[in-house]
Length: 484
Image 1 (tube, rainbow, N blue to C red):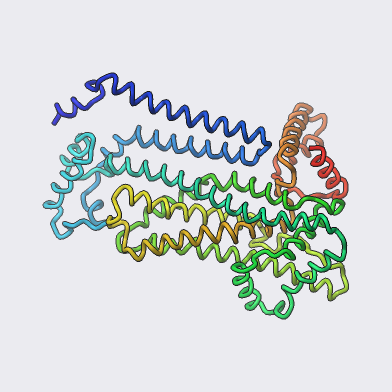
Image 2: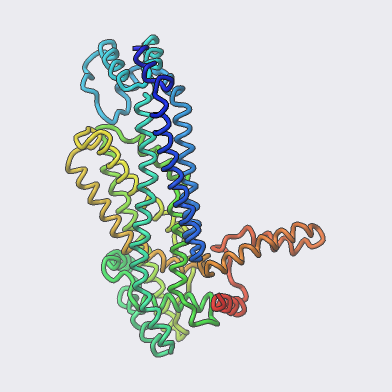
């Protein structure tokens, strides 16, 4: 056995084999790196700064995957040499039950060890543990499979988010026609007509909470966003944040915010990695964990969609009450309508929903390719079909209903988003902000007030900035954007 292992080592492998394999690995890596580099240059040339930052985020995720791969490779020998009693790997939290459970540990142990030895690239770890009457904590084969699964999960998550954003963006682009019609008919009569239709949301059931939430739930499936909704929310946003510019292109603004959110949602945050660990822990035979978890994204998605529709209804109710009091009826954006007065919670929920669904699909295809369709981890056929159907439902709902609702309704918070500026203006303001902060730091104590204000502007994200002097600010925004 030792002679066979030596003949398979690198020192007995022909040099041309090593050189050819190494050449192709390096070539593929360089082609991928150059492709990403040219894609970044193309996005910068097209002034798609949000998508460029999304690409940078993707590179960060690839670097993280590379670091995880390096850790798994470097420490695989150390992990495989960690030994634990046979009981813990044969009876505790197993994804598949062993066929020889009825056997005693003494009878089962040699057979189990021999099976593991066939999977090892070396027998050192198994021999070391067998001498102690134990088994390795994790075999080299299992480490390799875990490595592949992490890579598959990251790739599926990126592709899934990209598909969702493309389909959702296509749905939002259909509103461009509404924006053009509004721009061409900016008169009080046209606005009043849509206000009347929008206020009808609140008629008849405005004081019935149960009926209001029920209507919100069903409305997301048919006419989730109407032209009257878009017109009323657009006017409310402009009157709140840019009253001096009624021709502000609201549609372009929400498309920019979608791009900004995409660069965040494409990444895998630390809390999502914790969910991965938890999901892997709960994958126990007989629990059908992944079958029940497949319903979680659907439930969350329907809850988010219902909440967003209910916010539209609440805004319509407020307009109806204004008309009854004889006041000027208009949509009043406010964080009060959102969970815990924080519109960002909706984003985090959508981020988790996308990742959870991507995890379900990635795990399914990984098991299919690694162990086959008849693997015990696959569970029953009915469970598999249900999980796949749930995945398709989440994809359709999120792309065509929840994502467009999120992009529109979350503009009704108290603060505007980063996308209020075009990409080149945002880059200019970021550069100016950094330069002003550096100048303030150099002045030091000679101008403490100025330095403090500049530092505050540098630290606060765009989501937390509010317009105090609205008239000059909005006029400046429009002037800058027209000049661009």
